[in-house]
Length: 262
Image 1 (cartoon, rainbow, N blue to C red):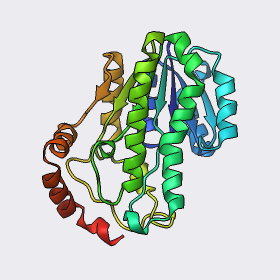
Image 2 (spheres, rainbow, N blue to C red; image 1 turned 180 degrees about the vertical axis):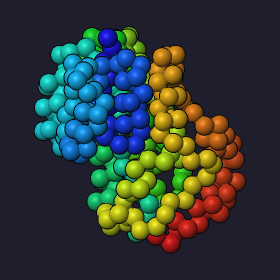
Image 3 (cartoon, helix red, strand yellow; image 1 turned 45 degrees about the horizontal axis):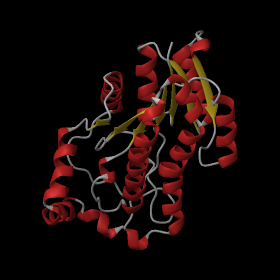
Image 4 (tube, one colour; image 1 turned 90 degrees about the vertical axis):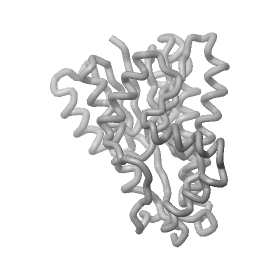
């Protein structure tokens, strides 16, 4: 039986992935900072079949806690590591406190990078795959998300480099680029001062649900895909940014004009 570790597993896309993977027969290791929610979700999912599921409550930006997790798991084969835990902000860059940018980078870039590097022995033993939940914001600018765009761009570049460096070890990388999802990451977005954002998010295209996204990620994983653009709009928008960046900026400023006031 194959083993999958999912971060940010107690809600949103992580929880949808856990449910979908469980139904497909995976053994799961679930990680989340919300210990109570994680325990409740794990009990609901596993029931009496606790041999197929382990869970660990910790903040992945806590280096010591992360190192303890790695020490616990690194000597056991790991087939899939899903770096899903994330955070975003909705605030104009010029108004945003540096602490907010640091927090977003710590969660969205540093934590998945450090966890992956720590678990390379486990992934190598299973000839496993790293799945990273990126974002269309890592490919193209989005007003009000300067820190998030930066973190997701850095995530993509790091793992595209790592892909080439660990290919001979049999380790794969699947980069996932969803657009807008109906998940808690947006409901819990930070404002300019680190408190919850007070204004509703701007979006373009269809807002998909987490179950829809989870199924496509697992299908892409099973097919050995390297990159997943699950929404045609996302792919077309990324092409527009590359082929006609000035037009893209005009359209973005029109659609996200409300972000300029926050």
